[in-house]
Image: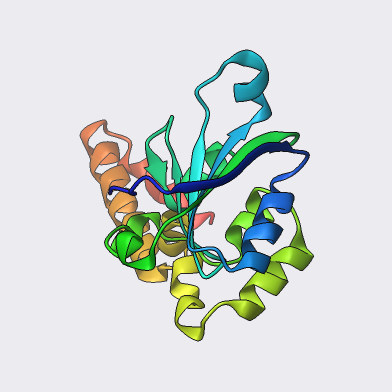
Amino acid sequence: MRIPQGALLRSRVVDTPADALERVLDEELTGYVVFEPQDALLLGSATRGVVTFEDGIPVLAYDTEADVGGRNGLDGFAVTGPHRVSIHEVGPEDLAEAHETTEFQIPPDEPARVLAGDDALAERTRELAPASRLDDARDQSSVEAFLADADAIEEIQREAREEARSRAEEWGLSGALSDAESNQ
């Protein structure tokens, strides 16, 4: 994924990412914001995250240090305290290809919740987001999606039981396993 260099609109240190998120939403920015948490500011760390926006609504998140995108990318730079934020404007046509990168996409309200812990801003963002961006299927992390798949979990449990029986027979413990199974 490549995000083109945008026109720098402003760069400053803010007390909370909510300040930048609210401003971007109000201005209906199409572009991106680079977030550098306090550890990067104070310790010279390379922690840096990028969130892209279309008409003020978050689309993608990417943690540059961990090379991870999406919800997991947001988690990488969700640090309390001051952040240096750099707000860049980019034409929508220049972001179109990047915004197709589904593994980096995030629900519109996620940055307000994860980075800022601001439920009111998250709800406001969600209300202003286009209906096409409110696909709840993207709200699940891969772990949550797996845990919601009862058939997959049942299959893993079945395979584990078969493996346990096989090992018990191999080690001459099949009687002990049968007794334990009947007690459950």
